[in-house]
Amino acid sequence: MPAVGRTPLFSNKARRSSFWQYVVIILVIIGLLIGIRALFFKSVKINRHLKAAKAYALKNKFDEGLIELNKALAIDAENPLTYDGLGYLYVQKGDLERGKDFYTKAEEKKVKNSGIFDHSSIGLDFITKGKYPSAFVEYEHFNKITVHELKGIFGLGLAYHGMGKINEAIDSYENALNISPKKPQVLLFLEKAKKEKEAGNILCVTDRNNQPLLKKDIKRAKSIYPAESATDKIIGLNSEEFGKFGIEYALKDYIPGNEITLTIDIEYQKAATSVLYDQMGSIVILKPQTGEILAAVSHPKFSPSGIDKKFGSYKYSQNKPFINRAFEMLYEPGSICKIVTSAAAIETNTDMKNIFPVQCKGSLTIDNQTFWCWEKHGNVKDLRQAVDQSCNIAFAKIGNYIGNDKLVDFATKFGFNTPVSMQLPVTMSTIGVDSENKYLTAEKANGLGKNYKTTTLQAAMIAATIANNGVCMKPYLVKEIKNIKGDVIYKEDPVVLKNTLKKETAESIKKLMIDAVENGLGKKAKVDGIKIAGKTGTARSSKKGLDGWFIFFAPAENPEIAVAIICENGGKGMEVACPKAKLLVQQILKK
Image 1 (cartoon, rainbow, N blue to C red):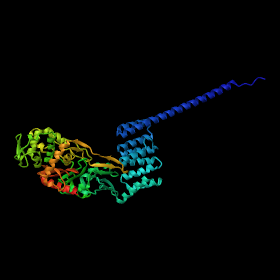
Image 2: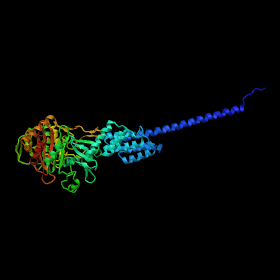
Image 3: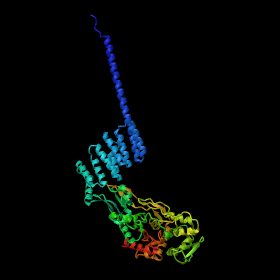
Image 4: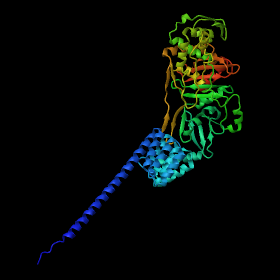
């Protein structure tokens, strides 16, 4: 019987079938790998563009960021994370409505919170920066795309709180406590919100001693001005109807929700207001060692809380009560700038024997023009007497001896021709650089001339520079800003603006200014028990009449304040400004 064997045909078929199965499997695997690889690299490319867009947005390079996001859309027009990125970019830009629109599209496409755009962290960053409307958009979006989490609910409460929506903040805090009933931080902010609701207002701006200067009414969302007209130009308004100026407008992005502390001392501010009374003009008080503005009063005043009833009379008044005369109005400085001229002469080692004695006959012919003094002083034997009597002829001689260039150079060292950067507008004080003849140089040496103009702030800086041993400090008004959590998000520290004079020169000028009050034209500023160093000034008013100046610092031995007072169209400085200086010192320094 023959042996049984396998059929060759059957065997070949089996082999071929098995072979093609392997081929198909291998091709499927290769296809899957190619697909996975394509999807992986597609995702990698999109993420690379999204990360680049975020980096650009954080640097405020929004156009470059948008280009990156458009590249991501070109790869996959339906990618939800790209729409999330577009929302993020526009929120960072400050276009919150457009940002919310893109977030809505991302939500419709079922976006998830990602490592690239972690909206809880982004919202917290906005909270830290004191930007609560932006934080609100982020936390609202976060809560829509995640299961309710404590950080999202609490963050939303902080955003509501910062925007002044106290009832909504309380609700959010209570919702957060439902998740974590004993969370100390949530309990703390809930208590704070309830206290504010009970008080009916939110504190926004304080003086240096934490006295309230601006609050926001919770129910009506209206501003409350505790100091009323005493801080009218400093706090200002942020009203579509009545005007936008002052701190309330300049720092509108930080109001409400943040606590803004000014350098102002409200007691000094009120004292200066009462001293100026109904006199048009302004008073600025500086802390010489730091440049902090302790008071800045401008008259005529307006009442911010009653502005709706008197706005018409304010708006059309020729006296322009909305202008901040302390920072914005320019005046001819007159004799207060004899301090600058004296400093220039002393600092450059001018030999006074080449100038004095000076015979003042009440006038002097310079370049065929009559240069006048305000009085016939006769024999002026030295610089001390020239300052005491404020002799124009003596200073005309000094000015032409040291020359125009030195007068300009030293005025610049005191802050003239130098812009002052501050939260509120400050007009630059100026001195003309060129001088066509000796007559104009004589004017300049006396603080006169069409191109010699000063703000009251700059005038106070002259006194402060002498008080601070010849160092001119940059003036500033905002001390610090704290966010809703109490973290400092802005702080201004003292900055040297100019190293103006040697200490020895400043000491010499101080002695001249003390003598000008003790024995000279500043006698009406004298206060028993407090030594004052000052200089009077009288200049031509922009109206018919004279502007009266007095700049000073006190106590002279250890200065606490440096002050400039101008009585606009009020008369001679020694007659109108000096008595006001006396009253001011008695109110704020007399113990």
